[in-house]
Structures are given as structure tokens and as C-alpha cells.
Image (cartoon, rainbow, N blue to C red; front, top):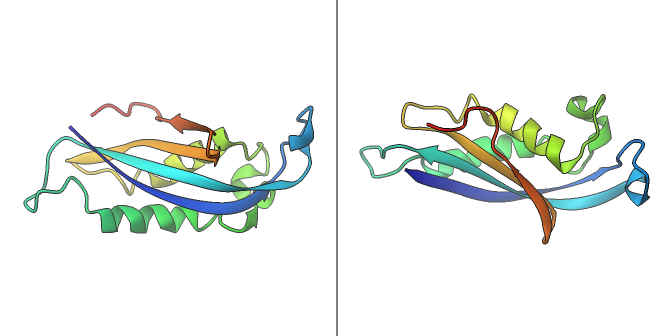
Length: 127
């Protein structure tokens, strides 16, 4: 197995509705994102997935969040744009385009700060 990943980032504002503290107020983060694809075998060039393709697909989705008020994004109108929900959103948006006989999307990591973040694996991520 090969776990192939890329790292990217986006900047955005949000607030957590009904949060009992400062995060209820509008504020921003520079979110760091890592997307990992798990490959069971390599192609004829010796790659699980080309980094160029992985970056293109991931950045196409991440760009929809960049420099936005995430509370106004259609995905977060009825749920808080928490790091957890952002990770699920990214995973769901990428799942189909990062699915192949040799590989599939394995995980999405979202970090609000250098020391705080999470990893979402999604349902049935084992190959």
C-alpha cells in the first residue's frame, strides 16, 4: 500500500453558531489541509497517482472555500463550519474524482492552527 498526500491551505472566516465562547464571534483562520490517497498498486510509470492530478483536484475544491465567509457557503448554511464539517465537506467533494481501480481517497486532515486539527477518514476507506 502507498499513502500519497498533498498539502495545501486556504484562508476563511467563520463563526460557530450557539458556541458558548469566543468562537461564536466572527474570526478567521489560515486552514492547512492534507489530502491522502491510498493506492494498492502503481501504474506503468511507477506512481499510485500523479501529484499533479492530485493537486489539481484538491485545489479545485479548496478554492471554493478560500477567502470566504464559510457561514455563507451553501454547505454550511444549516451546520456550523467547524473543522470537522469542513473535513467531511472536502472528503465528500473529492471522493468520486479520487476513486480508481488502483487508488481511492483515504483521508482529509484539517488544521485550524499549527497545533490543532483533525483527520477524517470517511466511510469504508479501506481498499
